[in-house]
Length: 112
Image (tube, rainbow, N blue to C red; front, side, top):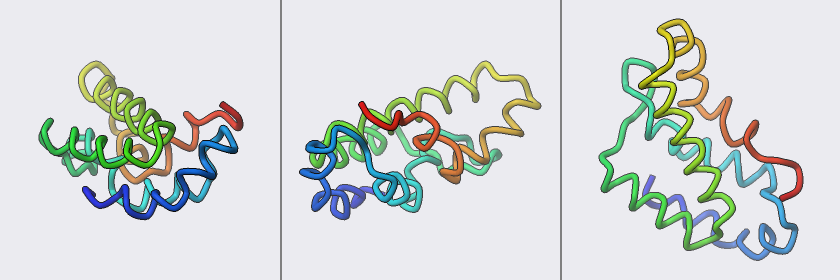
């Protein structure tokens, strides 16, 4: 996951010029496993330590603040649901958030 910034780097100018995050970027983030970083393993996550999660965010931020911001919001949603969500809500949403099925795709507006 720490190498997530590498495939995003060629897209940085496109992201910033378009003032939006293209769907291909969101798919790259989802495929990287990054959405699972703040989801408990019992809900399909691959939790990272705070240090590793910080390194992941730093790698993404080097390419563009836009996908890094989406990753941050995604992590906050996952952490909040993990901590305060009902059992049924956690079971319904966290696996989908961990896989990337939900997350940046629903958090990202068409245009920033």
